[in-house]
Amino acid sequence: MIDLLGKLNIYERDIKTLFTMRQVVSFLFFSLLLVSLTSLVSNGHTNLAPAKSPIEGRWDITIDMLGKETPSWLEVTHSGTHILVGQFVGPGGSARPISQVNFENGKVSFWIPPQWETGSNLSFDGNLQGDNLNGVITFPDGKNYNFKAVRAPVLAPKANPVWGKPISLLNGADLQGWHPSGQTNQWTFENGILKSPKPGSNIITDATFTDFKLHVEFRYPANGNSGVYLRGRYEVQI
Image (tube, rainbow, N blue to C red):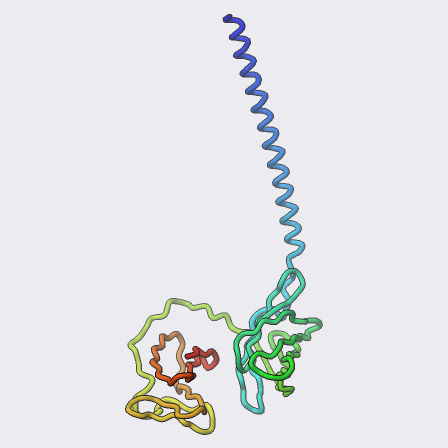
């Protein structure tokens, strides 16, 4: 009985040792396979990564609309391995997606359907020379306007803003510190309230600001409409 148990114990120990060796071999094989697959995927991803196109990035555009400079912007990015897509903001409306941006031999073009306008598609044709982009935009009404563009600066803040004391942008009596966007001004003050009795010019602050917090109070009739443009471009709709 003792010998039998002793042999049995040895046999069990041999089985455990054999099983452990099989585990080690399997683990090493699996590890090598995993490393090979990782290397294959990594190499494949590296080979498929698209080269950055010179037209990629953000562009600040100035459109010459009959002698009046109008701001616009364009952003071009890669989609997948070889297709360029983007976003475009014209003189009005919101940022519109571009399904494909064509770029070859320094020439860039795309088209987008009309948003608020009526007519045909908006088309964009430009020539890239270094960090300068120039060309012609054809709007849905069929009119052509020249444009020039430069790369948008990276506006990374150097530090968190330090807020000063609040200032009042309106004095409650007149439009001192403001100017109209058009030839005429329909804005008036009545009992300390700024009113626009009919559609017309926007009013713009003479001063410019960097970081700010803006507090505005509005009153408007049923079905009325108003808003505040920030940076002279982006409207907070009321």
